[in-house]
Image (cartoon, rainbow, N blue to C red; front, top):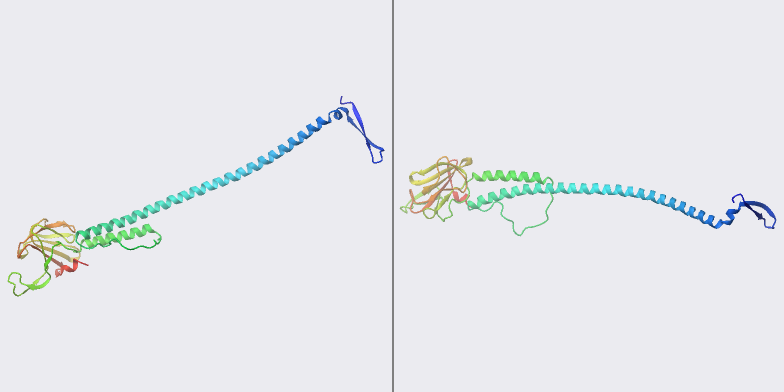
Length: 285
């Protein structure tokens, strides 16, 4: 079938035979089918080429996209770590300033216990932007240390009132309260009250004397730091012992009328290195 051939004569423009071609007869009979098959194969090859090209491009973009996704994940993790670190720093700073607040509250509580104004009262009608500061944790530790040092110093300095009664006789020269004649030096202040009312130490220290002592009657004498000394006289009762350590604001006895006294009151004296001073100057400031 394939051996059978058909001659095709190619004519020029003048109609003369110029060339002859022999083609298998089967091709001529089935040229349409062969043409369709050829077109199919051409389309198939083109499709394969396009698919391969598309697949290659897709793989390339997928790799690029994966790299970008990895970079984004690393950046996200880095931001998360940074945020966690910032949160930790904020917690540390907050702890430091909470320590300062705690120290201030302790000092203010002791001031109120002595009948004094607070060292750092609450601010009213105040505001403004918050300024940022580097090394806030170290700054907090610095102020915490300073406040503790201040607290320790205040503990040993006689401040405030041992009793909240009215002052009936001040420091300095006065008339003799028994004869109402002549002058005498009054080395402390007298605070009026009722027998049995509580008397509190105005500073921390050690008890030098607790008991009866001449014209003082029942008296408590306390030695404080830096040469300070306080005396609480005419008590009805003493609640401390010699050598005992006393905290500021601690009850040391009860108001009375013992010794040289014209009525229930507290005689309060303040000494600095043995010199008697006016206690009123340490009560209000």
